[in-house]
Image (cartoon, rainbow, N blue to C red; front, top):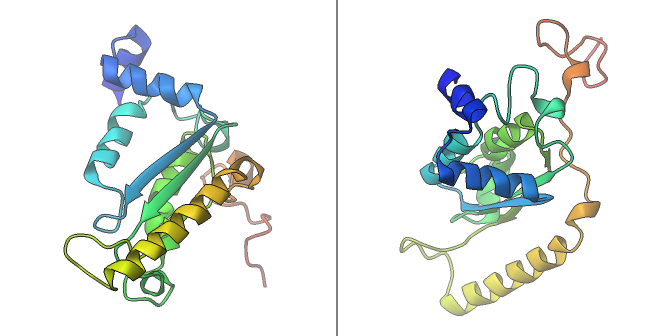
Length: 185
């Protein structure tokens, strides 16, 4: 972290990293498109987060969450899964998709993005696993593309996933007892 901060402050980040940061700063909306891979984003995307979201430049101890660098900008994950939607329900065999995506959503909020609910396209066949006949699958792909295309036109009207902010925590970083989502007898 110390090295990231020093490189950022000296303007000595690798050119590719500087370019990626500039792209993020330019954008009003960032779409992260990826297949769910081993219950998370693929390693290359995780590595991108590790290299591009540099400490001291894009976040610090006091510049996080609703005080983050990218506040006012939106981010969304567009995710494909191999298994059908039922597998990703709360009691499905793959587990609840909301829980699988929570770490990446939290990371995006950590650097200040308003994170929109994900666009998940289930049952995208690959790797030799076939859940349905090719013609049915092709029709499903076209339907998913149409749904996503329609949603893209209204993304800026959507409310972000609600996260807690600095004013919601006590000095120990715990949700205040008075916060409305706290259960009180």
